[in-house]
Length: 277
Image (tube, rainbow, N blue to C red; front, side, top):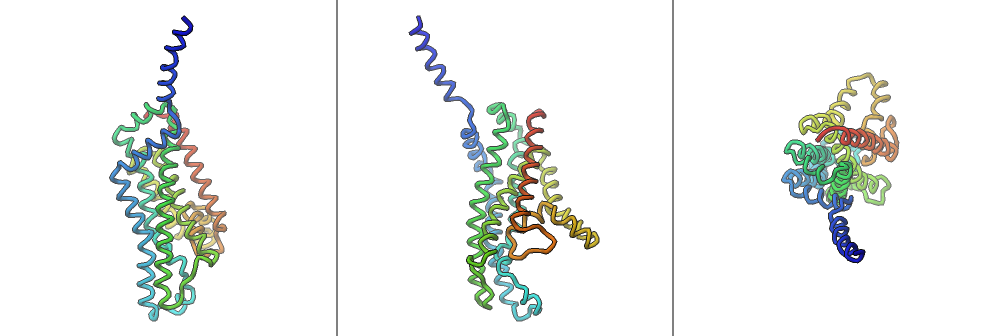
């Protein structure tokens, strides 16, 4: 009788183990879902083209009008900022896609299936954030290197180029990829909080673009007190070749932005557990 019971229990336990939900399996599922979306391919293509192509394009136009530039502009010309300048547009594509990764499932109702398969819910959020951050980092790192070397080749026309050996250069190129990866997680967290595509994109754009613009309307002393703590200002110092006297250090500002991202994820996780799908 005991031998028979043992025989019957073995396949049952094996089947349960095979169907067990693990974080790795959730990652694989989210990887498949990420690349099955048409919006993913178009958004990442736009981000890659912007990051890799705008820097060299800007460098080309600057070199063509070099003799007509003001002496002060030539004196303070920064080859690093020119090379990674494409991040201004790439961050918009990454942020919008980050919001869509989660809100898209809410709009179609697929999120219910995801939570039925993963009842604890939080592994879904971690998998979405981790998968997107890894993809964004790799693509933006490659794009940033392409932009840097292509731009420096163009800037040799007037001998204003720089090299990766110049201290801020390598940090700026790596920082562009790090910033985009964390920005994607930040946007995904906002999407999880709002659960609406239009609302999530509006909140993302407001925090990253509108609020910094509004602070420029304030008196200079107030600007200098507020700007360093804004998410976009704090984060972007890591990919800039110059430093504003009224901002945090590049890594200090990036650490603050990571702190904002963690805070957004904590709020998203709490709401994800408490609210109905």
